[in-house]
Amino acid sequence: ASRWNPEEDADFIAAIKRTAMGDLGTSQPDGVQDILAEIAMQAGLNDGEEEGLPPVNQAAALLLVRLGEWREGENLHLKRTSLKLYMPPEAEELANQSVAFPPEDLVAEHREERRSHAFAIDESREATDVDDAIEIETIDGEDWLHVHVADPSRWCELGSSLDQLARDRGSSIYLPEFVSPMLPVSMATGAISLFEGRTNLALTFSAQFDNNGAITNFRVRPAVLHSVHQMTYDNVDRLLSGDPEVPEVYTENKESILKLFELTRRRRAYRLACGALEMAVPKTQINVTMPEDGSPAEILAEPSKENASEARRLVAECMLAGGEIAARYAKEYKIPFIFRAQVPAPKVPELAGLQGEVGDICRNYRQVLMMKAAVTLPVPSPHHGLGLKMYSQVTSPIRRYADLVLHHQLKAVIAGKPCPFNSAELTRLMPVLERRGAAIQRLQRSSQRFWVLEYFRRLPRDAEVPVTVLRTQVYRARGGLPDTYSATVLFDEIGHIEMVRGLLQPRDIASKTKARIQSANPHVGVLKFVLQ
Image (tube, rainbow, N blue to C red; front, side, top):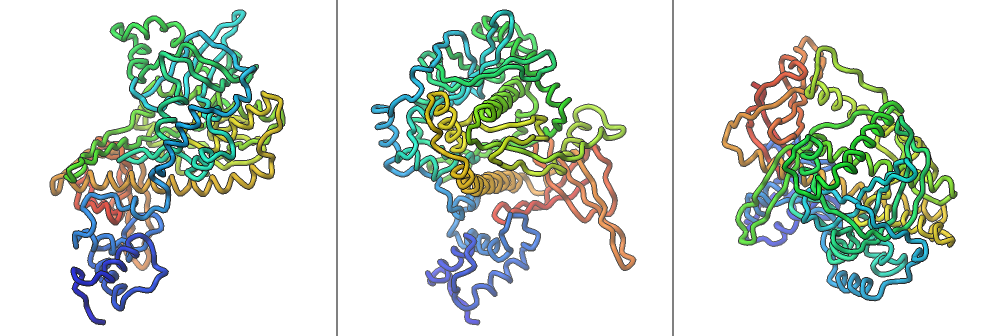
């Protein structure tokens, strides 16, 4: 086959770009595939770990970077995706019109005026989209948990252009570089968020619990919140640890926060007793800033605090309770609904001789590997991973279209109106949203991996970093060859988990060692390292 000068041949470059973005179906100029196959072989791209991306596609991306067509350190997954990452120009106008001239409030006469303190706990008091707040109230000596959820359905009328926009997007997309919201920014960070210092509209999921943590009474109703306090996870953690130097608003509400803490601890113990499985494993929290001058991205990588904070566990437990309340309410009132379920998995026992945090991480990692993915169903079914007889997701209607749909269903029943979706319509809608959700998860996961590998690529050559061995496996050889082993390790400094193969000796579970980084190629998804 003849060769081209890529700098002069626009057809060649266009063909390479099509291939790099996953297109193998269109015709290519003669020799393109041979060139890419040669690059793939030379670069060892058969070891690539990107989901569904053959070596030839990876080679095309690598070539474009070498030619300067694509930038080093540029997330190529954003080029490949067909998802709608950016709001159309008319979105903000749709949002402004909806806020200025809102549709009829279907449940206006049913809204409960709430003047007691509700706590919106987030990473920062400057959080821009606040979609939940929690409250504990004592009525006749009995404690009620109230999970207040933002009510975007008040402004986002079904069938409207704004609703179609949210439906097409499916959910917000969280990437290391930026967040692509489901709803227009001015709305998500404005009228529908539960902000301090103003009146907020919410849909409230409330329950009483027995001494074991089981729900004994529940209700769902729309509300008007007059007293939301925005708080941070860090300050709530400080309060729970007994730090006397927390801001005054925390000490003023200390009794209520401690009640919430004790209630959610009891609730978690109840779920574990009902078969819930411990699945907390480390994750990487990675944030990327793209300088406007085109200079290399700034990467901040650290272990996520998601599993290491009492305040975060408190809020998460409240959201799970809200989901159970919604599912129970839907069942009782025979509302067509979307339920989430998960089949049971064997419980991994404590690992012999391993105690403390490291032992828990090793056991939990094995547990996660044994779990089947949760599924959506039109009928209430057990969610064994959570230890709940029934469960629905309803606490993120700003971020998930399925949650928004369920808010419309609930509010119709509260108002005494027919549900906007019958069971057949919901059954048809569920796979559409699931496919979109799966595509979003793939993009989020591949983008996360891209930037983790870019972080490793920037480390000094042969850098050594601390790791913990979480799991080891043996690969039996044939023909008299020696067995080999793999080790799955946790990169302690950033919370990343990765497997290395081809070891000649097994590694002890929970042992600490160092990994020497040989190479990292984010464009093809390959990290190579050796254990010391």
